[in-house]
Amino acid sequence: MYKEVLDQLLKYDKISIFRHQRPDGDCMFSALALESFIKDNFPDKTVKIAGEDIYDLVSRNDKLSDRYIKESLAFIVDTSNETRIDDQRAMKARFKIKMDHHPLLENYGDINIIEPKTSACCELIAKILFSKDFKGYEISRKTCEYLYCGIISDTINFRTTNVTTDTFSIASKLVKVGDLQISELVEFVMDKSLDSFQKAAKIVSKLKLRGSFGYIFLKLSDLEKIGVSQIEAKNNIDEIGKIKELNIWSVAIETKDKLIDCSVRSKKGFIVNQLCARYGGGGHANAAAVKNLSKKDFKRFYEELDNMANQN
Image (cartoon, rainbow, N blue to C red):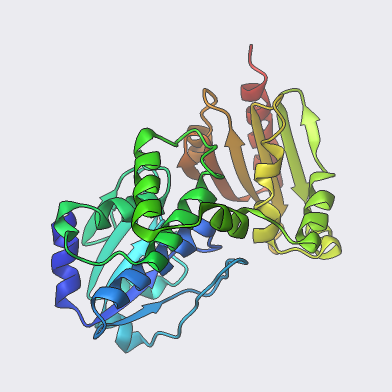
């Protein structure tokens, strides 16, 4: 299947790269890594990254015309279902390749490479580029940096339950091939500015505990008072996970439509994606989300998370 990706890449002069709404590090670095690899090896091809939402650390939102998209090969990264693509025009591309590491929800691409056992989409892309089908092509230092940053972003520097021996093997290859300075990349991805740290402290101060279940609920007025976006607030969920007494933890955020978006994390053995799926969401076994819950459904959802976290 990886050879099919290369075959399509060789055919097209116009490449478009799409990613999901409210991009996180893995999503954004996946797009940047693909762009870097293609530009290094196919300098005559045009590559553009689509999307409207931004990722606060690094971001790229190129302007793509309808005509450009319709004539292009589209890579859609880290996006499990079609409705979550940041620019819905992706489906108008002449040929679509989906690359994702989430459990299968939809096969919306002409080629669908979905490997849920990989810890990050960047790990999957690195696996593809290091495969025998791509042998002989350059994987530059910049490409390796993007891929490594995406992996440590999604795994919280190799702390999540979906990290495997393959994850470390791929990371090791990236370090060797790219001659990477690990400490500098970890600092770039993981460290916060003083302003961000102070905002995070205000968010975490709203933590409520129900035994082994912890949660933060933020109204729109809270976001405005603290001075953070929904994405910035949600990204602080990993801070709660450092509390060893918790089995499941969540950040819930009120939307402009007065609905509620929830991000959920858990420790190994507490599978949350199946519960999230019952409420219209999904994700990994220990990292999932639900969007647009009514207040009634939100209350019931949190009661179920509470019961799961505190089961004997």
